Figure 1 (tube, rainbow, N blue to C red):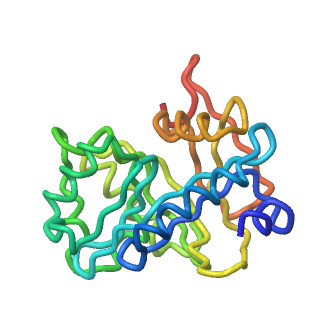
Figure 2 (tube, rainbow, N blue to C red):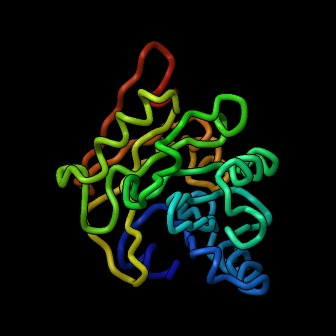
Amino acid sequence: GYNWARFNAGYDFYVVSDHAIQVSDSEWDRTKEHADAYNDPGYFATMRAFEWSHPLWGHVNIFNTSSYTTLFTGLFWLPSFYDWIDDHRALAQFNHPGREDWEMDDYKYQRDVADDNFFAIETGNKDNGNNHGEYLPYFQKVLDKGWRVAPTSNQDNHSLSTNTHRTVMIMPELTREDMIDTMKARRIYSSDDPNMKVVFKLGDAWMGE
């Protein structure tokens, strides 16, 4: 998968994120081994993640943690999940928003718990990009709620396939460490055009900051 992403799809960075309920402890360990093996600082950045999947609350991608969790490990209720994210200093992204009935408790803002952890929301997913309009309205909705998130457009491909959508990260160097810093700073945007490059600054602050 990493070789395909780098040499066939032409990505600069790639994250493998499986559904946590389908991952064993040994598989979770192997995802780190593979991400580390194919990480090539300066040329190709890799990272592992997992997707917390709930049939009612929705799905969230979790980055930059040493462990993973599921709704079956005492985290069936949303407040417990937010507490886990905060306790593990995780970075989190709302995935394909609005698909489940309870949609993260209508995206109620968590000022004192997970505010600093959530950095992104998908405005594009699989073959539905920004222009499709399915997910884009939720970006405005969560901003209105108080969340500080950047828009992303991800493959969610479940196979070695790609489309024109891209999540763009503005990074000083192509390294995993800079990926994490960029997520925290929200220097990220979503594009349906794989070749479009956008730079927006206000004084010394980059977009997202």
